[in-house]
Length: 437
Ligand code: C2E
Ligand code: CA
Ligand code: CA
Image (cartoon, rainbow, N blue to C red; front, side):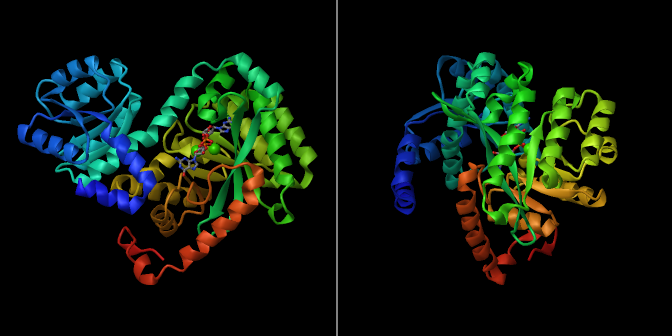
């Protein structure tokens, strides 16, 4: 209790509200070792949690999960009868709606694999901790349960969106571009913006694309949506003060769009209308989905490149691209997926992957962009690794064009204070034995 009071005092009233929510959690502890199970329950009680149930193995846990809607299941990986991995699978079959916190005394790489398994089963994962568990680590991870809830709720209500809703949205200009800054890691200067679609829904507020891009693809709305994003993004950027006239604009095209003749001629004609602006546009192609017809894609991308567009391979590292495609396709930028950036601080293997992506980009003469950079440590790590550009909440969230000047001002201030950090503090960040400056 003293620990909670200290936290409340430290973080203020907002934290008090969160702590109150924490005490209302319903938690299942699945741990075969009696001593560790009791120790964990004690820790949870000390954190103020009132509703705690124990289970000795996966089978017992599953019975309880079927009867009771737990918010969080804290689960050991190695257990007799049904181990943690099998339990995760069975929980997904039961459509478990809460969050999982994994525990293991085994090596970190096993925890990482189990973490991946949880995400593949579409279960909300709040952390993977090595034993013995620290009170602060436990508390921090339990709080993540609340952070991730709204997103899940959001997805659930979007299941009801229909093709007719999309028709109306496009007709009534409810789809608008938001802009997220990309800045140079070398000097913090603005490089460009990625344009990301938002649906300003009259009833649900702002809806993010993960909830409707798939529907738009399946219902044949992508040509119209992409055209709208191109025109609106350029128009919005043109309304900004003159100092922004040289910035680049990155726009997403679904791989299927490459086979769309209408879209192709539209972009090439649009380009003519833009005159000088054509050099400033980057087309981002996600590698999350397979490019069905490689020959066609190669032809179309080469044509876009010929007409002066840059081409970025998006979400690099998590999808279908082969090394062969990377060298054959006319890419000019490589965007490292944010899932890697998110994990690189805590997982040396992921850090090696990020480092290799940057090296690969350099050798293939591509610019590297790290996505999803959220904190100072990630910024410094990437800078030390020689990554070219940074995109992420650390610099700016995606915002409407009107907010750009103010947001860029606040980034400049942040960057200046970043540069003022004393050498002693900087030297605490190490990348593969070399200190970053
Ligand atoms: P993407 O192209 O990989 O865009 C980056 C996504 O990462 C954006 O999500 C952005 O808001 C999010 N993001 C950026 N920085 C951070 C960060 O620091 N932390 C975290 N947690 N997230 C960050 P968003 O806007 O929801 O877009 C999701 C995806 O939808 C995009 O992923 C893109 O593939 C697709 N998309 C967005 N707009 C369009 C569009 O106009 N056309 C097409 N075809 N796809 C689009
Ligand atoms: Ca993108
Ligand atoms: Ca991406």
